[in-house]
Length: 465
Ligand code: MN
Ligand code: MN
Image 1 (cartoon, rainbow, N blue to C red):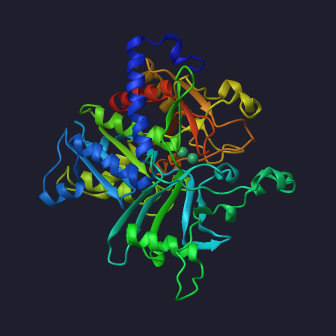
Image 2 (cartoon, protein in one colour):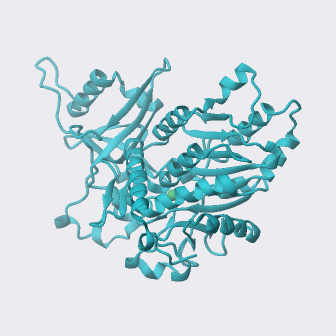
């Protein structure tokens, strides 16, 4: 039920558990800021827990049995992991699905230029951002550069204490009279999000006059330090993200301020819940996907057939007579929690929330049936029977949860991956953690909600049927 604060009745033992899990989560999101980094870290966690790559099982021609653990990845950006249960797969899966992409600035394919003595990188923002929030803060660059020969250079600059950071300039207040009159969406325009990366020209050469010497110097450094040529930006995926680690917030240390809680704050406990839950009656599953923030598009987004193909392979490895009808039955009989964040009630903007149906930081895992805008457009609008089942198992396990919607009616709305899995006819509801300042460079969550949601996810995997 709503309005039960976790901290009010928490035991000393549970505070310890909350702190331990939160510290592990802080490491995870500080070390992994892009979908590729989260995918790599996820694979490492799965392998350490005994999960085996799907293609290896296929190659070995081995049949799957209860207790087997399998995972597969899609282009190093998405993961589907399965822990085979005791019952036939046609009875359905218990699925936790989260996304591992977060709003950020992507470096364009032809990004590099010199102006006014600076070298800059042109960017294109990814996902819904308030552009004015991204100027004048320390930024890091993460990603890969793939050369024509297929070799991959991994880039991560700005995270170590002695790394340089980058920044986007903003007009000084003294000259900003006109700028300050603009609408917030226009104060900083998309094309003004250019990252300053250098200010030192090449050493003067006697033989020739050097044009664009500051850019020339950066190119020289890129060549010597990373073996990257200017053209290599064409086949790079470089993401500009806030530099620095997530940290505890508040004198009471009750919260975590970090980049990209949306949606790694659900992805991490989803994966942990899968790994930490013993073999169940039903097959359990966690999906971590890319591209949610731009509409779940592309081969690594939830709308790709990647997940259905993986389930088909799993069924094929579990039976002697695969047919598509088995896949249809498995999907339709599945239950899913679309593990995604919700807007946390913010007292400074209280009029944007309807207080009885808002999620509060500290009040536990949020079940969100009404995410959409206007007349619930884009909502999961989960079935009452399904929500009743969830209430039953969560209450039995003592998991503290709240029901909520994403802000007041007619104020806005948001989408998740829920509707895509619902296409298979399975029961789906959004279920995750309340976030303050969602999509800002630094977002805030409650440590208690993080741990409670992890407990809720474990209960879901084990008990829903
Ligand atoms: Mn999200
Ligand atoms: Mn989002």
